[in-house]
Structures are given as structure tokens and as C-alpha cells.
Length: 150
Image (cartoon, rainbow, N blue to C red; front, top):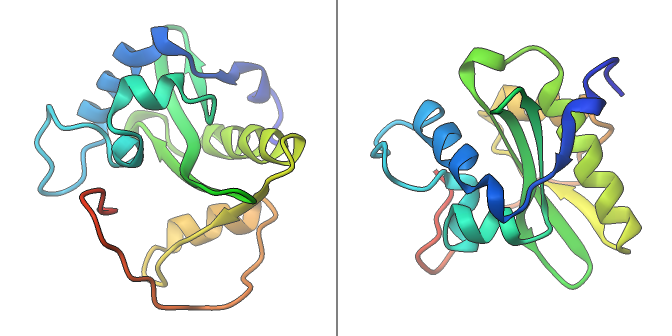
């Protein structure tokens, strides 16, 4: 676990919607409009639902949500983790602290924490390895419905 960063991590709640809005504006993906929900909130139906879900943990620096780890897909037996960090706060081990909080909470609920990352996303794969995830296999994922990962 990264030193001195875990204390900044806490579960998100309904009052954190504005903090998620700010993170979404600062960490937009190419082609994303600034007022769109962050891609990590897409499977929840938006920021309010994600913040209230009980499956999101954030690292706060003062009032700013600097990093987020959440359940992107939550199943009966698993929690597939998504991570986002405000570009101004990258490389501070905040994402790693959030991932540790998410995996600890998943395990406490009897869920297996999983991580999905395309081969081209080296940063995601490196973070997964640093958090203790190990590759099991590579697969093709088919998706239907409105919430598409960006």
C-alpha cells in the first residue's frame, strides 16, 4: 500500500456528485463532451448514481476528488474495477490507494475483484500489476447496450 495516501481515501456518497462532475470535466476522454458523465459512471447512469452506489472510493485532496476506483461492472460474484485520476494528480499513488480500498471492500463483501484492460493500455495494466492483479487470460469482450467503455 502506498505510504501516506490511504488516509485520503474514503467511500463516495451522494454528496460527492459535484466532486465527480469536476473530475469528469478535468479528465475527459477524447471525443467526450465536458458535460458528459465520466466514462466510469456510465454503467451506473451518471455521477449521482455512482456516488450513491456503495461501490466507489475516492482520494480527496482538500475538496478535490483527485482519484477514483469504482465498480464498473458488478456481478453476483465479482466487482470489475475502473480507475480514473485527475491529470494534475497522477503519479502520486492515489489511484493505487483507491484500488486497494476497492479490492478490500469487494473481498469483505464476498466479491472477487477483477480488472479488464486492453493490451494497448499500458498504464492500466501497470497499475493492475502494482495493485496485485495478475493476468489470467486474454479474451474478446462483446458489448451490447448504451454504456460503452471509452
